Length: 347
Image (cartoon, rainbow, N blue to C red):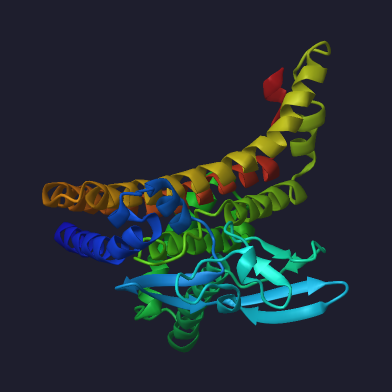
């Protein structure tokens, strides 16, 4: 298995170097000595209104994505991102406005007349999210169909892939972290784990979107955990927040403030941990790739390939670890909210 991981990572490294070589030169002006690896890296980890795959010479191979806008004086409008680009350089800007609307260099929509506009576009990350959701639904529904037809027979296909994951999340995460009431939360925790894990793994493919490295996505997942924790919190949970048992009256105002702030710092930590871990991995990989084209050296290229291969192996582990950590901490927060506390222990 380790050899397969090594071969896969080496293949990814070569694909990365091939895919990003001409892109780096085109976007940073490397041939004219105008290297700017920072803008190159940031461009490839941010969301975008088009899906860029690779370059063939100076030709950009991209997939234009739907641009959906709404304004009170214009109504709902549909375009393609290619309508707002320079056809040769594929750059956005106010000078390439279409029908009074433009996309600036930071991928923000605006109007030439400075009027207000709402953006409902299918961006690269949104398209990636649909792909991840479709894959998760396909695997889970296929597994469910197998069990419906065959009962407890040995799993095959998607069922054989999903069954160990379900058992792991149920027995090693939900049951141990939540306790007797764990079964009602297993569907949510399983959805979290599979969605994050699939998004992490697909994000490692050359040209893929940085879905779980987008803070809007991690914020949404953390917010869902925040809602589930506090909606299901029992009397003991809220009593520990607003009237902590066993605390002297003089310290109670301080403890209430600390516990109240803790309601929000926990999901905030979930959000930042996943965002930082995934984004940092992408930045490091792209930074090592950039070195080969900055120094224009074969020896640096070989070193970059070795380092990118090594980091790809680590990222395969991080993809799983971060899905596990996010799911585990969500289960722990839920467990603390639904647990019955023995208040006699405080005395």
